[in-house]
Structure formats: structure tokens, C-alpha cells
Image (cartoon, rainbow, N blue to C red; front, side, top):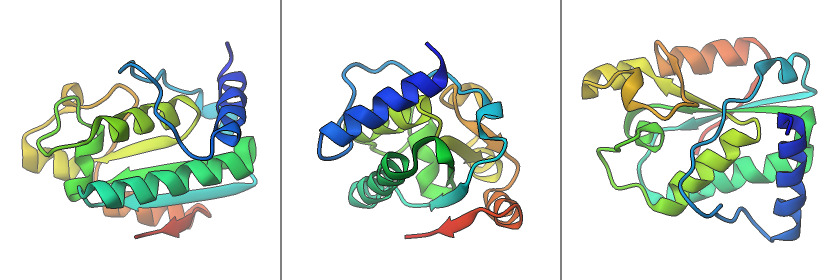
Length: 158
């Protein structure tokens, strides 16, 4: 099934359920073809920098809401830095609720990009092998936020 088809199915499912529900199981998302987003109408980057479960829930709900509203017309990026990086780790060093891990994987499967801060990874002694398969490692998370804004991405911070 093409990524666009999977994404549309997710959008229909998300619209039918009144929120972002967990996908059963712990399967990791397949990477999405980045060429799908050559010219999105909307571009949005979220700063994800806390490990608090309530914070995580709110940010990921917002990402899901934007995905439901704009679908294939938007490219959404979540840049995980500092304590927020743990959502992208295979074995997080902080407690991450299973529902959050499942939401991250399902959002990634439907085109949301997740960027992992290389500086934070270095400070934790982590490398690419410690991260989920769909995590895109960037050298410096703050630099990623700046560069994406320079490319026209709107910036969201909680």
C-alpha cells in the first residue's frame, strides 16, 4: 500500500474516532517517501523538549489534529531535543507511556517526520542504533528548528 493511501486511511480512522487512538501492538512505522512532501501547502515544525506525559499527550494530539485537518497538504515535523528525545529511543532512559510510543509510531507511519537531536544523543551516549528506525538524526536540534523556519515552516512550542 502506498504511503498516501495509508495516510488517507489513518485520516479517515482519526476522523471517525474522536482523537488519536493507539494502534494495537508495538510495530514500528515504515519510513515514508520524503518526495511526497516536495511542495506541501502547509509546513509546521513542533519543538518537543519535555518528558512529561501530559505535555507529550498535548503536543501529539495537536500533531494529529493538524494531520486530520490538512492531510496531504501539510508536512509536519517534530524535533525532539533534551528530555523530549526519549520518545524516539528504542530503550528510553525516561519513562514513556506505551500509548505515547504507539502514537509516535503511527504518526510517523502517516508522514509526520521525527527529528532527533544529535547533541542530546551524544550527551546520552546514544547513536543511530539506539533510535527508532524512522527517527531522522539532525546534528543540533535548535539548528534544525531554525533551518526549518528559514525554509518556511511555522514553529510551534509548548
